[in-house]
Figure 1 (cartoon, rainbow, N blue to C red):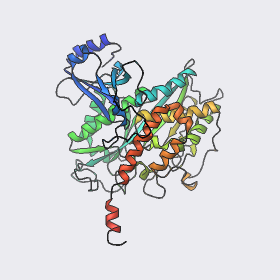
Figure 2: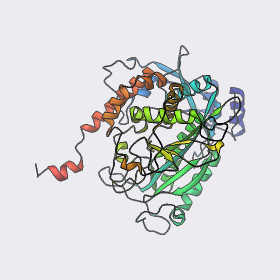
Figure 3: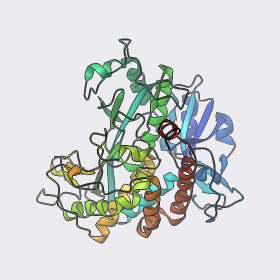
Figure 4: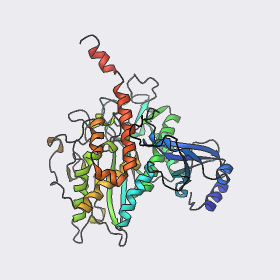
Length: 454
């Protein structure tokens, strides 16, 4: 186990575990690991590693915005990577003893790099701390196992399990369907145990080869770090077993999409009590205001929960997407709404945000969802009445594509103020660049139906 809390204890931990290499990691805008790999001795004695701040303006395609809005500095200033010792873990799949650490980013003058997603989450958590509140979250992560596929024009297929056959049909909650991939999941649990990832339930979801992992509830920053590590680890395990693990929101057109649901509650730092429950055990005013904030601001912030063009395929109405929400209605134990409140005792009163896809950056998901709820609490926003019927009958009340979602985010000054104006402008620039790159692509659908018919 890694209990490193200072440079000295980090050195001791390296020595105890015979560490020869260090992976210096940080999440970029998409949540992808970036960083450097260094010899352990050089890492401990060579000072803080440096990287250019342009890491945070690189798109998913590896391109950069034209920067007409001057959202980043053209000289690509150096950042120092400052390790968070609490994130020190072994790399289970490495051939030599290797450590991995998540780093925060600072300019050489000591200023934090505002575009770093981890900093954005810390910024929002500081707002809660200033009011004596501590968010408690529990992520639920859906994903698909698929057959390896090196041709992007070829549709994905479910992998072959132990029986030698592919899944057909939907097998939600099937134990036998999970057991088809027992060797993979046994190794996944081993890797998670080595990395102290506090995963809980594994279930088979509705899609062919679609699974869900639930995390135990805890601190938001720690859980974002755990999701960051988990996604990386699962991809490695899947590759070792001849498969891909994908967190695309909608990887296959005739299968359900994959979500990252986020359960949220707020504790009073002084008493440790859940502020969502009143003294009589009933939902409190802060609980209502939190939901009111989510209902008010989530449509403006959807580009942070659905960050890619593919994300919106999951959120379309009247398609094979089963329980994916299409609005921000709320209800008790209602899986058709965007904001579900599970039945629980007063101490467990919480709100499940069901909007985000599995492709979301976990740091930005938690920062943005908590920011929306925070605005509701401080502005005392009242929610609409809870739904007791299907939310699909209410209609689609969300931006329908990435372009419209980015427009909505750009218009929302309140979200930009909490997440940081510079971060928000940078995010908009990066995502608009990705959206334009996608618009230039001629799809197989266009060639199939338009080539000889129009």
